[in-house]
Structures are given as C-alpha cells and as structure tokens.
Length: 127
Image (cartoon, rainbow, N blue to C red):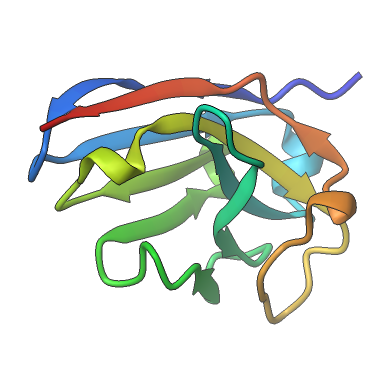
C-alpha cells in the first residue's frame, strides 16, 4: 500500500503565501509523475499542477499559473507546492497525487489516471 502524506496546510490571509509538501516511498518518486489536486467545499476535485518524473517539466491549471510553483526532490522522496498571491478562491483541501508513467513530458493529470492519492491537507485563505 503506497502512502503519500501531505503537510503544510493552514490558514493564511489573502495575498499571502503557503508551501505544501508531499512525502512518499522511493519507488514512486523515482519513476512516477506527480501532481497536486484540490477540492473546495461543494465542488469536484480539480487538477492544480503536475511535474514529470525528474522535475524538468511542469504544467499548471490556468487558475494558478504564475502564482503556484510545483517542484520535487527525488533524493528526498518529496514534492512541493509553493503558493503565492493566495485568494479565498484557493481555499480547498489539497491532495498529492502520483501517476504512472513518469514521462519525459507532462500535461494535466486526469483524476482517473491517478494511481495513488494522499489524504489531503486543508488550506484556508481568509479575506
């Protein structure tokens, strides 16, 4: 059973920044593409950002492009999401996801293509 664990959620004022981390097993971080999804109250889970297996390709949803930065450190079996210029619309539970294969390229990850999920971490942005 693969376990992905998110950390770093919390409460931040609008305009602020927050960093999320995802940790997991080495066999996932060595070969899977990774990504972040989020689910706001009453809404469906949506794709946020993706990164290919070695971290040199990234892809973002239009809603976060230019504000969020995804990265990974395979040596530490970790992935990160740096979130800047946060707005109340970014309030959601954020989920770490892993999808096979890791690819050389990366695009938006479909919910159905995710092999492993984390349990999520809550991000709340106050106005």
